[in-house]
Length: 95
Image 1 (cartoon, rainbow, N blue to C red):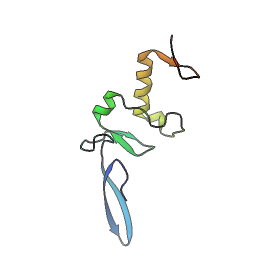
Image 2: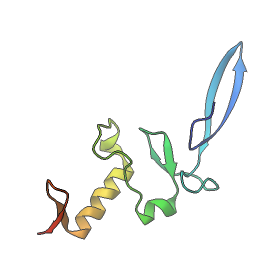
Image 3: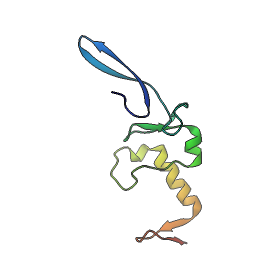
Image 4: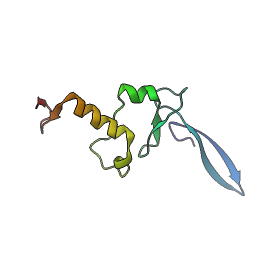
C-alpha cells in the first residue's frame, strides 16, 4: 500500500511489514522532490509550487501542525501583503 505523495519501499522483517519513507515527491509535479510538507495530509510540494502560492487544503479544519506549517504561514503572509480582509460573507473589503 503506497501513501500518496511519497516514494516508498516495503520490506518484511520476521513477518512484519515496515513502511519506510525515502523521499517525498511533489503533489503536482511527481518528478520533483517535495521540500515543503503538509504533515496533516502527508503530502509535499516542490519549491516552484510553494513560490507560486500553494495554499492549505483544509484552512477551516483543525490541524495540530498549523503552528509550524510553512504552507499556512506563507498563505497568511500573502494575504497580509495583498491588504485584503475577508468579512463573514466571504467578500473582500479594503482597509
